[in-house]
Image (cartoon, rainbow, N blue to C red):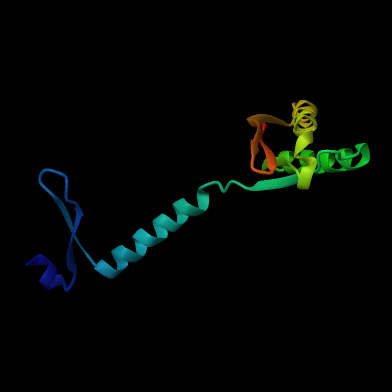
Length: 135
């Protein structure tokens, strides 16, 4: 009755409450405000960025240092790091070398990030995840 007189809508705010809560408002405006609130919450949510670094089982020292420098930068920027050794063809026989390489990387990046997942062989890749340390 009141809603009709004011030419507005009767909107049920919380149906689970006893008694249910209703308001006399413009429904389109209510929907707009609700979408705006959800969008604001979504924008505040942190997005997890995962950067990848790829090694070979016999990556030489210079390439390793170069990639490690990038890994440090990624972790300092707050991104997660996915370091993996890719085994091509018969190089899978060097999986112990790949594991040693990843563990060495984890040890050298200890002050920038912590190991989230230890090196694990998945198909032709040995993958390790590192997450940044909080500042």
